Every structure is written in C-alpha cells, then in structure tokens.
Image 1: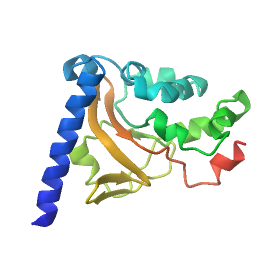
Image 2: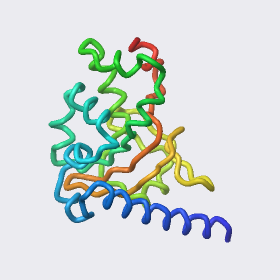
Image 3: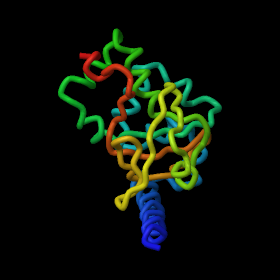
Image 4: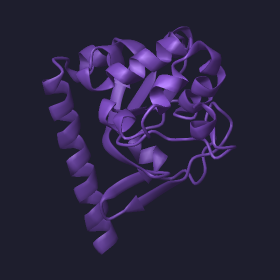
Length: 178
C-alpha cells in the first residue's frame, strides 16, 4: 500500500514539474511536441552545456533525426558537478569519441515514457551499455542520477531531465579524457 501511495505521489510530482518546466521555458507541451529533441533542449536555459556537447560530438543530426529516442538530459548543474577540467577536456576535438560515448549513453532507442521506463530492468543505451533504473522513495533513479522532470515531449522522442551526468561503465572514460 505504501509503495502505491509513493508511486502515485511521485507521478503527481512529475506532472507538476512538467507543467512548471513548460511554463518556465515558454513552450506549452503541444509546442514542445512539434520540436525535435535538439530544438527542445536548445530552447531550455538549463541545457546549454548539453547542447554545446551535442554539437561538439557531431550528434545534432542524429538527435534531430527520425528517432524515436529517449534522452536522459543532464542539466547544466549536472555538468558542473563533473570534476574540474573534465568537460573542457571532453569538448576538445581529440576527445570527440569519448564525448560521443558519454552522450550516447544518455540515449535510449524508442520513446519511453516514465510509466514504461520504470518497468525496464537494464535497458541498453544507444552507446551499447545498459543503465540501471530503480524506484526509491525519492523518485526514479537512473544509475546515480535522479530524474527531476519526466516526459518532456518532442517530435522525435521524449526527454527525461536528470541531475547527474551518466558515465558509461566501461574503462574510466572521465579520467581518460583529461
């Protein structure tokens, strides 16, 4: 019973945060759904670092493509939590493949809503490695990142906003970039 109440409360919070997200960023849900994933992110002040990284990794065309994709979108604050110098190193042309690996680890094939995502155990990312999805009393976690806003529509998929940059579990990509 407590789990049902917790899930219902989490769903309510996600709905409220979606409305606040859309109002804060000037687009209605219908207007967002007409834009592709990159356009939705570019129109949001909280995703400027993500958009810059997508451009540096030459992934704009892919994420503007047909899809559908589910993007686990780290905020600018999430990128700021990376160790000093990590982002700058990843943005260098010689580290483009490492940046691509990190960014594609934030993309799931298909448009997966928050209702569906919690049913998945270890979904594989476009990068190839799976992510772990768990439900806690505080909400949904994807690896060590908390979903802070879910189900932002785009013409070619869905965005779920997360508070931490996900690093693929392969060799230590973050340190290799330095």
